[in-house]
Amino acid sequence: MKDFWLGSGHHLLDRNADGKLVLTDEFLKAYLARPELTPPPEACADERTLYQSLFEEPRRAVSGPEIAAIADDDARENWRHMIDFRDFLLSHSTVEGAYVAMVRDGRRTPPLFLDQLVQVILRNALDDVGDAYMLRAAEMLFRPQRLTLHDGSLLAADEEHVGSAFASPLAAMLGLPLDGVGVLNDDNAQNYFERSDRFDMALDLSGGRRGLAALAAVLERWIKHLLAAEVSIEPVIEPGDVALSWYVGLDAEATRIGDALWRGGALGANERAGILAFFRLSFADPGLVIARLAGEPVYLILAMTAERTLRMKPQNLLTGLPVRQMASIS
Image (cartoon, rainbow, N blue to C red; front, side, top):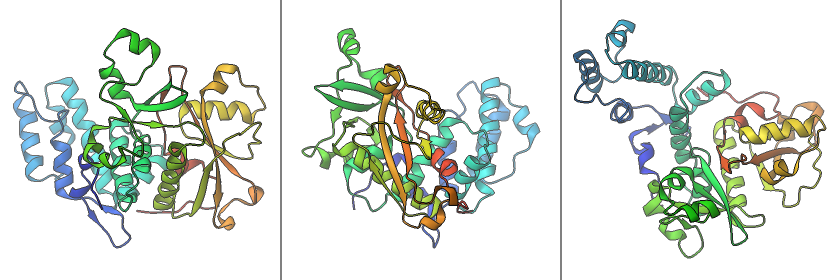
């Protein structure tokens, strides 16, 4: 099987007997090597000493006064976040367990750290997947996207590339595809693996095409890996007036729309235009579902903002599904 997302650091982690990720010193050192933490030439001696000691012993306890002694305000804040994050990871036996605990406890964690955990957990959950459409769809769970209509297709491109690659004001105004960003298709799918860390392939999310089905398959894997629950998820091509017995918003805008529909409110034209997809979710074991929803479908909503951006919140699936008892992993 071809490798992908080398930048996630998955090769630096171990796996336990259940296939979950186990923290290693090498993975912690990779975090220390990030530019946000690497001391610049003008860094004070206290920061340099802390950095060097952690590179030699990445699990060692760090005291509050050690961090307080760092002269630069931004560096001091970065180190507080990093050590707090590291200590939380170390308090759990697996990376997956730490992530689930962060989400369920409502722990405040910098979005960058959460996105990095989502990527490496997905890399583990999708380890045996060779479908480029699924892997590109999975990027949406940890990389913000910008949506554009082009030749009748709804395309999702990595927001970072959108911000840097629009070559002309006209292209930006028209929302045209980007220079250096190709749309994933059957002809270039084999190239995904060699460029997977560039995040430079757009995905067609038009109804009835492979993008939404691929995203549904990724969400099935995500739920199975983290909640040990078998589910089937399928896009609802023509949702019409869906009766929401239960729903989960896959992003903040979708949650807002779902709340409005739940209360019986009418959506405006712009809100309806912002809905990217409805998915219907079914549990393989109906006994997992709370009694009052037995036999009722669960809907997942995906939506973009008025600025045509999408930032998915995969953690919502860990807290919002109507199950009797959430699976527990440590």
